Length: 97
Image 1 (cartoon, helix red, strand yellow):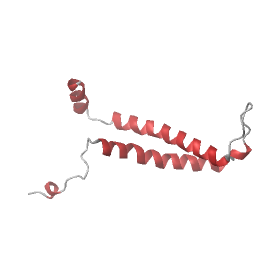
Image 2 (cartoon, rainbow, N blue to C red):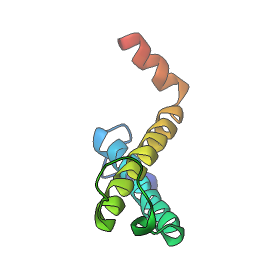
Image 3 (tube, helix red, strand yellow):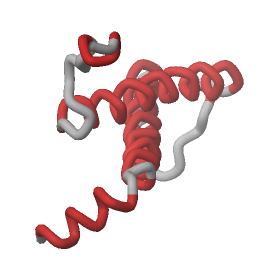
Image 4 (cartoon, helix red, strand yellow):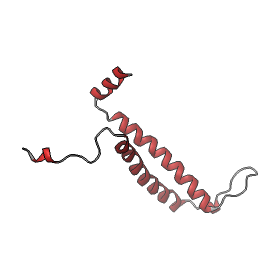
């Protein structure tokens, strides 16, 4: 018996939970980094918003931009995960549909 036979992953390789973690966690870290970089250079209180819309609070701007950054980086992570599928798995999914 090999040592690798005793080690089994806690979450199977193709599970939805594993894919969600592979998408959400790196995109969260990237959004945090982007938030820090952008707002180290831009003060949302000094930005003049066009039109007659009321001036949003700083915390509101931070929140909205964080979720925008997070959604963009989630899309990028999803694309990477989708592109990293082996060709046999892609072909099997196409035949099963």
